[in-house]
Length: 335
Length: 292
Image 1: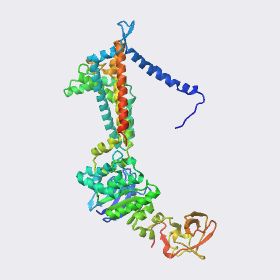
Image 2: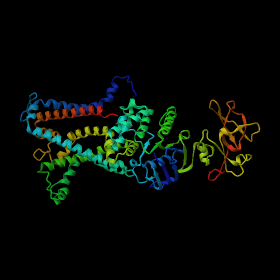
Image 3: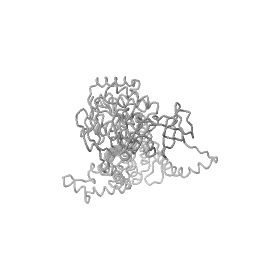
Image 4: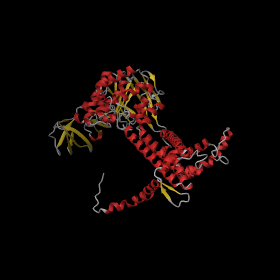
């Protein structure tokens, strides 16, 4: 159990490329933090810096109030779950679980107790003597989690652990990870590019873009009040409509803003709505339809009842509180 | 697998013919001749030969010279294998750790493989030459009197070094490929699991490249037993006092220099059987043992 603090953390590669710039995150004891962002935004690099697999060129990282910048990964008291699981293929599941404990000179009966406990939690008992190649993707994922659990570390680090699983299993494992973390109350740092995964897992989200933190907040805060146009477009599915204010001059508040953001699900279809949309594409979702058209020459999406059809013209009104206004230059939120 | 159906029965055989002819003329026919020779004894003038059954074999197994050659071969093959594999693994690990100039080093390290065995032998013969060589001169400075012409140990060391050097490039390439096929995340996971670099190497890296290692073991032993003829011939010629007379060299010496074709034939048959047995045993074992 521990808190993790990132203070002005940055990374510059030897070639001079800046991967991470000036990141500040306070992670409380037992908190589940998800780092989310598009690929190449530096989220994995940041996680690996906390793990000790990448050097930290600026700032300090503290785990349990101890500066770990120069401390070896093994001595940081963290456990990591890798995207490809990184199970040792020549060892049985039991040996995989024991490896980290044996290396630390844990006593035999203590090793046995912890392995049995982790195997119980993750329902791995029938597979303890199998080699990883004889396991399914979900089981391998569990072994990878087990290897982290047996260590009883101060923090779990997850590097896109679910992205190699099929969609159905991913949802199931997502729930398991969430419950497991609730139960063990171990501080967790989780990296994903999947905003849905981020929303469902996180106590707090950290949205990263181009090596910088765009916003930190609970999933609802981030969804309701995105701090920048980038966050607005990244979090939420279908993505928020972002259009230049001059494309809809008759909307309230459009006078001083550069960009306006409206979520597709936040609009009302009314007879006298100020926005006119001719439907030129329809996506069927079952209960609803996602309809696409142009507003002021910009692509625009609305969730509509399932009778909305191609070629139809919709008139839309936007509640004031559903209107997000961003600066055109910086992309920052204006209110 | 794609299967082609030939309507003409003759065509497949015609297509295979060149390779079959080469195999037959240069491998099967000489091997059969050696087997046949091994049952014959020529008279002193090579005028006629008589069938003597297994006599050549029994005589060999009674000959202290041949038993010595067996022992020399064993020492030689094991030393060459250990030295060349150990050294190439060391180099491969070093190159695997490098990020930028790995390509350059790999290219440089592969060059020795392009050198013909006889040239390699001559090269080392010059370096170690007691009269004009650079190494004996340096060794003399530290008080060691190197002379592979009279000293058995020195002679063995020379041929082992020359033969191992030649094989390092080959082993190195396979080891580098083997090491690079191990995902970096495995080593990272082990590092987080508290294993230091040395422990990581022995508990993760080495087991994971064991298929490569076993394959190279077979190749290296076969190399040391067969392909080192030119190295021996260009340096020690089996001497001094039979100290480097490995089996394949003795086959040549007894047969072509000594003109004792019957004994030479029997020796090559024994050599062939040893290598076949080694290969079968090792590959059987590899298939069973190296799996994950």
